[in-house]
Image 1 (cartoon, rainbow, N blue to C red):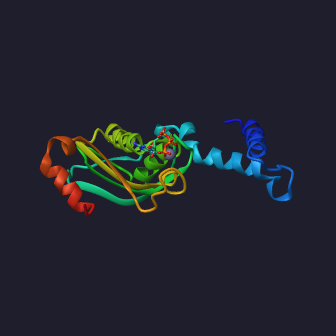
Image 2: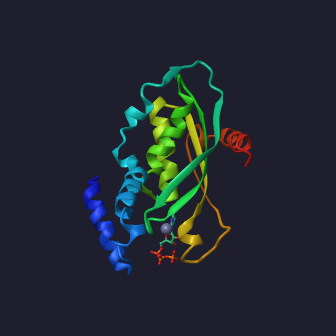
Image 3: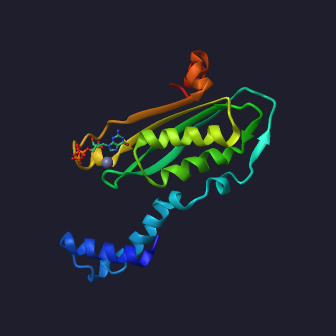
Length: 185
Ligand SMILES: Nc1nc2c(ncn2[C@@H]2O[C@H](COP(=O)(O)OP(=O)(O)OP(=O)(O)O)[C@@H](O)[C@H]2O)c(=O)[nH]1
Ligand SMILES: [Zn+2]
């Protein structure tokens, strides 16, 4: 991302919305916004292999591993407004498990992009499945979308829930139910 070009675009945007980019409070705004977008979209410039960083460990146990309430902040691709909430992840390993922090890092990798919640949910599930050849993966995400709260239909209390289930979480109802039970759903 070319931050200097983004700064100029933000300056133009300020003018178009009727602001004066030279007034004191706005002088550094293009620079701040460019930095902010670089962070909020860093997922495009992050290499999945680097994120996982070989934190794949052998394990014979094939019980279910759960990470609950991982915070999610993303931008909706329709309005560039935030959606945010929590993500719950479960998987059953075949031979390998992932370093615990890597689940959160995979969430970051895909949430720091322009997204719809459905795709974000399935990309996270797929990345975990592929990284360790898991027997099954389940991801449930619950988010609030500012594009529905502060504009548009202006619904303040609605939450969107999405899920993606792969492998045994897809085929086996008992595995899926165990997952939903463990995440408290
Ligand atoms: N399925 C899905 N829809 C989303 C997500 N984020 C935003 N949307 C919806 O995308 C739709 C875009 O609809 P459009 O009619 O093209 O855009 P709009 O006129 O701004 O729509 P309103 O929000 O209804 O004012 C809206 O219904 C949004 O609520 C998401 O993550 N998943
Ligand atoms: Zn939106």
